[in-house]
Image (cartoon, rainbow, N blue to C red; front, side, top):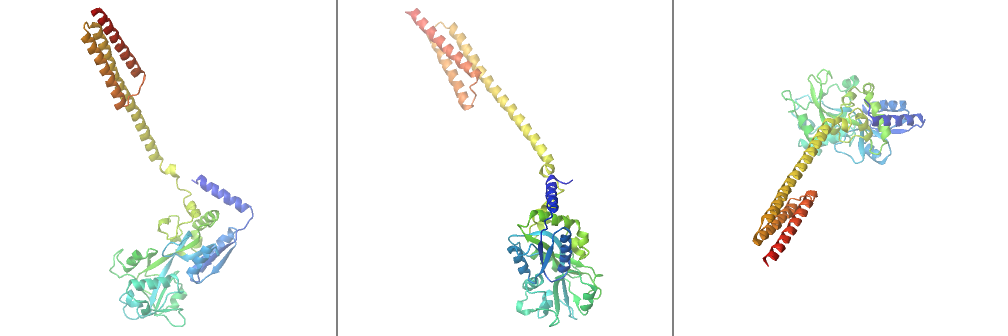
Length: 413
C-alpha cells in the first residue's frame, strides 16, 4: 500500500510534469565499458521522462567527482570510491564492474605478487579504479611500485598482464586476448571465505568477491575464476532536487530488466533489496523515500510495542493511584487512632478528682498533639479535614482540662 507521503511526492511530480517545463540534465561518465553503454541507456530513459540529458565523457574519475561537487554536472556514473566523499551521494547502485586479470605467462604463476613483479601491466587510465587498486595490492603483497611497469596504454607495448575493471568480455575481446589466461585469486582447495580474494575484500571494503564460471570464457580459462568486483553507482550532489531523485529512482529500479539489456549484471545491484548500509556514498534522500514507500510507518511498525507500553503505563498509573489511596487511608487510620486517644483523655479528665490527674491528662494531650505533628512532617500527611478535626478536638479538650483545673483550685481555696 502506498504511503501518504509517497502520494504527495507523486502528486507533486505529476503537477511538475503537467507544467510543461523540461529540466535539462548532464551526466558524466568514464570512457571504459560498460559505463558508456549504460550511460546511453540512462540518457534514453531520462529523455523519455522529459529530461533532456547531455553525456560528458571524462577520463579521470577524480575529475568526474570534482565536477559533481562543483555543480558542473548533475549526475555521474562512477566506480564506487574507497571512502565517503563530502557532499556526494548515491542516486542508485547500477552494476558490478568486474576485475579481469589476464596474463601471457606460460609457466605456473605462484601468486599475485609473482604475477605483477617485473611485469608490464596495463591497469586502465591513470588514477582510475583499477590503477589505484593495482598499486594498493602491490603494497599489500610486498611489491614496490618501481617493481611494476605500469603501461599508459595497451597498444604501444603488449602488456604481460591486463588488470582492468569492466563489463563481461565480449566474444571479440576474447578472440583479441588469445594467448592470455585468467588469473584467479583462489586455489582449488580453498573453502568459502578462505581465498586470497576474501582477504583482499576484508582489507578493501568497497570490493566484493566475484566468481566467473568456467564455462563463461572458452579459451581464457578451463576452471572457475575467483576475482573481484567494484560497484558502479550513479551519483549526484547531496543538494540534487529530491523530486527529481524520487522520479529517477522510481524509473531506474522499476525498469532494471530494461537496463540489463545494455549490461546483464545490472540486476545484481539495481534491486529493491538494496543494503544501503553497504554503500560507501549514502543514498540520496529522494532514493531512500522511493525505496521506503511501501514500508510501514513508525506507528505501524511498533503498534504492538506501543500498545504494550500504553497498557503497562495505565497499569502502573492504576497501581500508583491504588497505592496512593492505600497510603492515604493508612495515614488517616493512624490519625483516627490519635483521635480515639484524645477522646480517652477527655473521659479520664471527667473522672479525675485530683489536680495531679488533670495535669497528667493535660500532659498526655500535648504529647498526642506532638506525635501527630511529627507524623505530619515525617510522612507528609496531608492537612485534610480529619487532621483539622483532630486539632480542633484536642485543643478543645486542653481548654476543658484548664477549666477543670481552675474549678478544682477554687474548690480547694
